[in-house]
Image 1 (cartoon, rainbow, N blue to C red):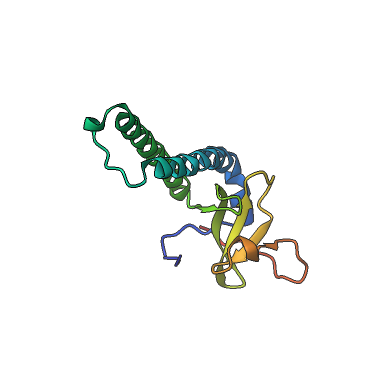
Image 2: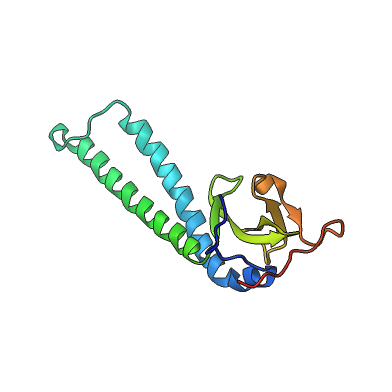
Length: 153
């Protein structure tokens, strides 16, 4: 992701202040993304090589129903993702496969980075470079690092 002039940059304090709402959205997002993933896998396995038409009887009708449910869940998933993005945050898929991570664009030592929060954590206490992701997370309190610069939005 590249940062642009209109993108909100978060301070640690701003990211932490947004957590009550971010936590609620991310909790719903993690649960739903896990269900969508499972439903998609199931749908793909039972519909492999089949054309969906109502002329094939109840089995096809059930598949068509499942496909509709899957699409509705994906639409809701996209709505939740958009809610986080509207706040200026960026939802990410975590190691579990669910969307349970949130990155907050920020600035550190005059370069763009992400403040990183994982569902279940009390506060934003980590950051990472733009290209390293969750595996490159570092503590904000690491004394060897310069603290995150509080840049006004």
